[in-house]
Length: 154
Picture 1 (cartoon, helix red, strand yellow):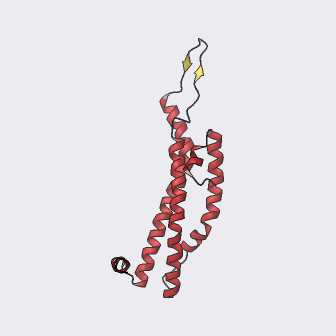
Picture 2 (cartoon, rainbow, N blue to C red):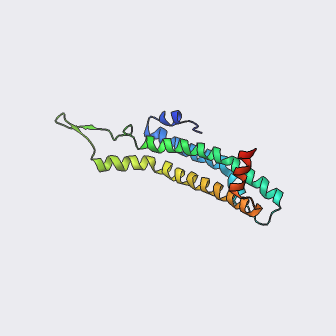
């Protein structure tokens, strides 16, 4: 699995980018399975200790998911870069013919499309993490402002 921006920018061909997408998506699904399982739980009827433990567990995933998002965002921008240009063709008269701008843009969008979808998934997952933590706090009667005040006072 890609873990750094440097690795993402090291993908130098369209095939490398597409192969990395397939591998990353597979590895990402496996890595996120425990979180997705926890987010599918109904926590409303749980005991306060269970809800608190669940909240802590889900919250620990935020940093990992944002790291995955960072790498995916780097791949999106890299796929849209000028690095992935359609090849120029030499004409019979010895001139150079470039693909029209709309064809070049469509090519870049095709390369970035899968990465954009993964980016949206990860952004939504971060929203789900935040929403679940807020729901747990509400069920437990934890006021975010009061909790922040207690942390500062300690």
